[in-house]
Image (cartoon, rainbow, N blue to C red; front, side, top):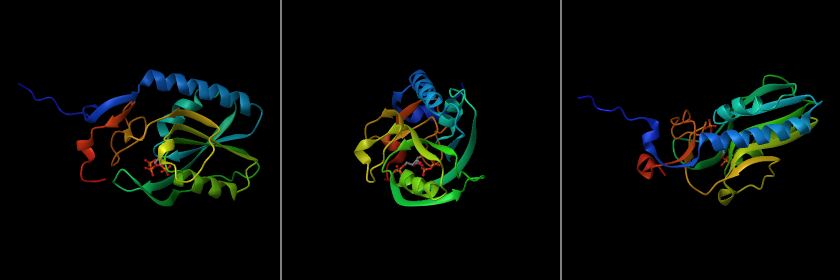
Amino acid sequence: MTTAVKTPADDIAEILLDADVIKQKVRELGARIADDYAGRDLVLVSILKGALPFLADLMREVPIYCSLDFLEVSSYGAGTTTSGVVRILKDLAKPIEGRHVLVVEDILDTGHTLSYVIEHLRGQHPASLGLCALLDKPARRVVPIGVDYKGFEIPDKFVVGYGLDFAERYRNLPFIGVLKPEVYAGLT
Ligand code: PRP
């Protein structure tokens, strides 16, 4: 008799947003972005690593000329709460001066990360600076931020999947779910 190997999905207590629901929302956001930015020099600036699946799906729903660039930023350690201290691990590869920048982010939680990123990018004088966030957890907001393209508002639960991690795991789940508390017990 073989013992079944545990998989990341086994650590999920509840699926909050399944793959079809995410896909539909990404399609809607992409259509709006394509309408708004058609004819402009658009750069999608994604924040690694969490926004990677969202960017990959979103860009294929934005059928206009655009380019990509990446920032890698970190504000979380191995725990489930933000430290509030944001660090740039990798900066943009190309100048954005005079270009239309849309920041693509997976989740807006306390707002520390995006407020830092916005200030960082604004200092480089883009023609415009917009924000697209798949998830918004308003109950946790510390720094007020306006989002131009928002996917879903979600409750104050620790979510993983579709790019979101816990201790670097679960990013590869195709849905967004709530982690079983026993998985992170003792770390919060
Ligand atoms: C996560 C997430 C956002 C940020 C949101 O990134 O991807 O960037 O936290 O939280 P905030 O609004 O409280 O700042 P993380 O620092 O965990 O890095 P990752 O994208 O590599 O997972």
